[in-house]
Length: 234
Image (cartoon, helix red, strand yellow):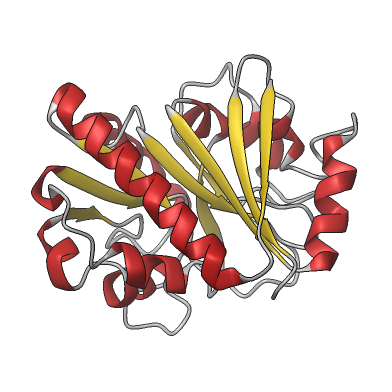
């Protein structure tokens, strides 16, 4: 495993540097095999990054954008990651990219999972670039501590690319890329903001159970490189 920590005094400088890094990797992947598979996180943290990246002169028509996780809600719901990505990333030049959302028309997430798995297999995997976030509980994507479905999602012997996660107290189930899927990426970026999250990250650097801090599954996997972009600014 290799971890590179890139620290920035504020979010603006982090966004500038991470955008430049993503631009280089997208161009490299496009030149290498004519298409780019980019999986991104939702939430408010990456929105400034998405807005800046969306303006970059890239071969967007060769880019496939997907999500690392999604709440099982339709796109007209305020909590939809797909809607957030459409608004903040897929405007302007980036509108030429192909977007493959996770949420399918099937109302039941468990029933939809096999269909989504085939869609990911055909059009998204393997990933070129994955952009992950991390919560104060150590979750990444929708790999939440002690969640129902977590052990299956962390089991790399399983062939599924996506898994349903259910967390007690959350209003709806989530679909997440599995650990196996996240490990296919040629380039992995973890975007962390705020001192409280950094304290959790420092805990995750230490050996321990991935079920307690699921981000450990990425950070400690043998032979895997992860670039961590951190600012103490929330």
